[in-house]
Length: 89
Image: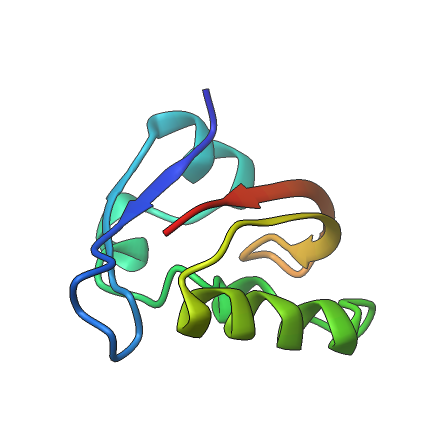
């Protein structure tokens, strides 16, 4: 499985508290590089990431509502990756 878990009780940034080995392998980041980053995954945004979806993710986190979507993210090496994002606070 490829997933991250975040602390929804820490409103500022919703830090990642766990990421699976699969997520690390898929995204090309070491676990230590991902931990404590925002679960909005801004570190995976790039040129083809839809700005409207970026805003929807942020709003969903702020409002503590579910988000489902397909978004273009980038691996650490800059290679384009495709993710299905789903989350609930």
